[in-house]
Image 1 (cartoon, rainbow, N blue to C red):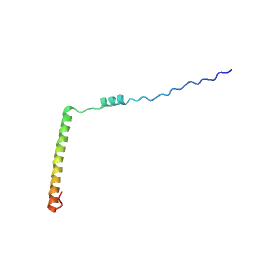
Image 2 (cartoon, one colour):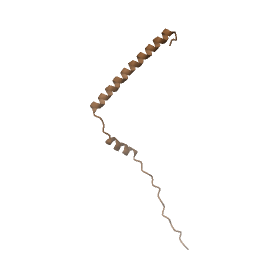
Image 3 (spheres, rainbow, N blue to C red):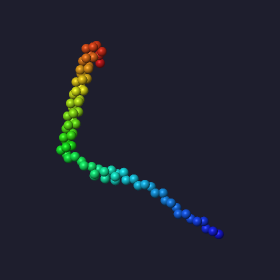
Image 4 (cartoon, one colour):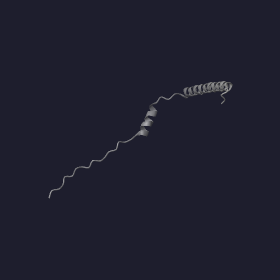
Length: 74
């Protein structure tokens, strides 16, 4: 009686996922700005946003006045 030939079982290998490890590695490579540069950029952004807000508010008020003078009303 002959024995059946056994074939080796192949294990399914899963590809390892190192998302978190790669994220940390990438963050270490980044050249981060100094605190002074960051604070200066934050101040510039805040100043620009404030100026833009006032300009937009002025345009809105002027448009409302013109519409009221024309009798459209808001």
